[in-house]
Length: 302
Image (tube, rainbow, N blue to C red):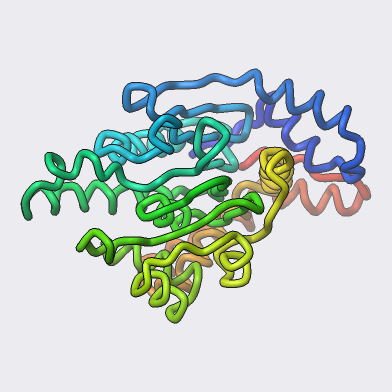
């Protein structure tokens, strides 16, 4: 993914440099400029991909169905991340739900009688789940899940595959596979175990209970909680801080964390290669120069 900082990307970075967060007028002005973004509808409009400077946003957009994820949406999540990978200047991805009420109710159970009607179709459906989780997990830049309302089942798996997760105080979470007589893909379970630990993962799967946002925070699933009206602003601030740092460094860090968790030799080699590439980068030169000149660095991603 080539990195080229656009005007809107520079505006996003400026948000990260606003340390007086009480200055809402300035933050609102910058946010309005960031909202001048390009969007692409996928899955018949059930997914919206928005590109704004260095920030991409994927919105699950079926608010009348609590953003339940159809079989087509699972496939188009992969497409959305492919498009992000082809973009030139994306440094952070936001994953959220449309309509202002819910992240997602998870897979659309209403289509199971057709999409998962027998072992063959169920395996094909599960593969589309796994492909979507992998697309989130393997995105080379940080992915931030922004969660309000319900985050159930497969949507919990999508959020678990993200790098970071923040939520509003009223969010709730559940993994109710046991109530449907189903199991989740092993790769999705790996994400959940990494996100909450083995014991809490067992608790969620075995009991299928709903947990509140405070419990999810205590379990380590969430990074932070916010008032509902501040959630989007908080997500944008965090994304801007991410965008302000050297993109190659963030990609190398993400790969190194993945290697540490997976214990896979290919992941380890990839992390080593990405780490080594930072040493000869122009951004490394810029970081040293900015330190000497006692100013903020401006990273270009090369």
